[in-house]
Length: 283
Image (cartoon, rainbow, N blue to C red; front, side, top):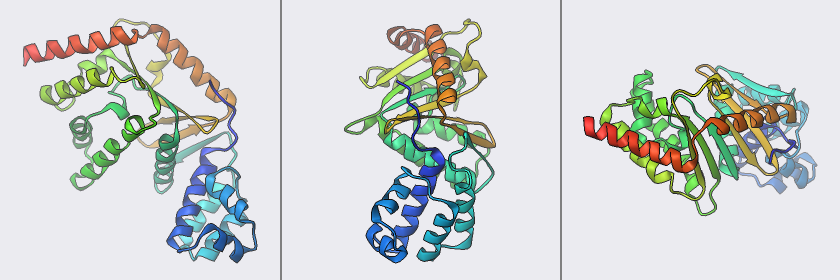
C-alpha cells in the first residue's frame, strides 16, 4: 500500500537535528518550550517531523540552545523549502544530513523495498562483502571499519523483535560477481540462502537473459513508515528523496514491473544455491 506523505524527509531531518541539539544542551522538551514561550506539543511536533518549523523558528530554537552558526545556517536553509517535491543532496554536510535521515527512516520503517540490480542489497550484505567494496572503492582505511559497522548495524531493522518486512530484488549477474574473491562471495551467497528462509524477507532474483525492466535504470529503495512512503535514490556523488504521491506511485509501478520478471521466492532461493554450488565446485 502506497500512501500520501504527511511529512517530508527534510522535516524529519530538521526534527532529528533539533532534538539532538536540545539533548546536547541538556534541556527537556518542556524546558525548551518554557524558554521559548511555546507549547511543548509544538516542540514535539517539530522534533518528530510531524510539523515543519519556519526558518525563523529553527533559528530561534538553535539560538536558545546555543548551537553553532554552521548548524544554524544549514538547518535554516533546509527549512526554507521543507515541503518541496524532492530533497537532493550534493556534497557535505548535506549528504551526511541525508544519510542520518535515511537511517532514521529505515529504523522506523515497517516495509522496505530495495531494488539493487548490480550488487547484493545493502541490508543483506555480509561484513566482508561490504568491506571488500569499500577498500576497492578507495575509501580511507581508517574509515572503512566504521562504515562497515554502520552497514551491519543497519541489518537490525530486519532482525529485531518487530522487524521490517524486506523485499530485496537483485540480479543473477550481481550474484555471480566475485566481490572480494571466491571465499568472500561464497560466504555472501550462503548468507543469502539463510536470509531467504526468513519469514520477513522476500528475496527475488532477476535472471540473466531478461529483457529491459526499470531495475536497469539503477538502484533505489522505498520505505513505508508511519503512514508515509518515501523513495531514496543515490549515486556516487549525490542522493535524492522523493515523497509526493505521483513520484512514489511511479516507483511502485516500477517495482511491480520488476517483480513480474523476477523469479519467485522459491526459484530465487534455488538459483542462489545453484550459483553457490558452482562457485564451490570451481574453487
